[in-house]
Length: 278
Image 1: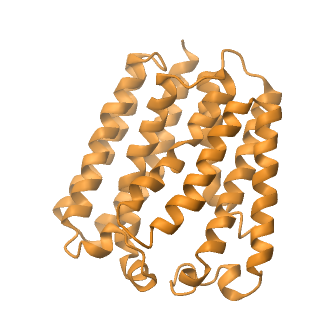
Image 2: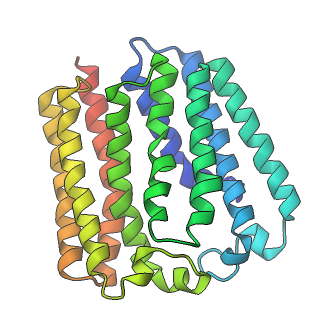
């Protein structure tokens, strides 16, 4: 269970379900169940692959050194096998229970996370942009499961999660920058000792989130009034980012991080509620 990170992946799986709902003309419970189970298995497999690859660095970080691999409770070989079984099973469930395209998107998510983003974190702070790609693909998995196509709506959902992730991650990295530095991760918060660039990038992406939330009405995902409401929630997120930009304290970073955990569900609830009225 620790290798699968079920609590961390719960939001991603919920986002898959939202992508499916927004794309489906009529709900097929069998397909919906398949896409939730399949994407959950793939996400769990990706989390396990990540922990196997980073077990040496996890042992150096306070917040990760109690994971099973650094503690020696699970061998790397067993972790690899667990990850592979879950991932293959998840991809098969998606391909057979939904459609092959959703399985391909899930495979892209897995590969970009486990074999591109994970090793890249040791080399460059730009890795966070690469890591935001697999993090933003879950709603696309849901959309393709419902529609069998990649359309502008799917990419807008991708953009919303992509833009949200950067303030979310930067604020978390600022809170744990000493840990990241100890492990040798090349995150921006480690190289940016003043925090100015970290905060300004967080603010920039939060502002983009406002724009993307508004565009949900333009592509027909939700009525304008609901898109404006989603943009308003994003606007509060911008205020948190502005406060962090003016004062790079741990308290402001924590507020931005906690705000990120609230704002994305609020955006999804608003878009779903509006879509139900169409």
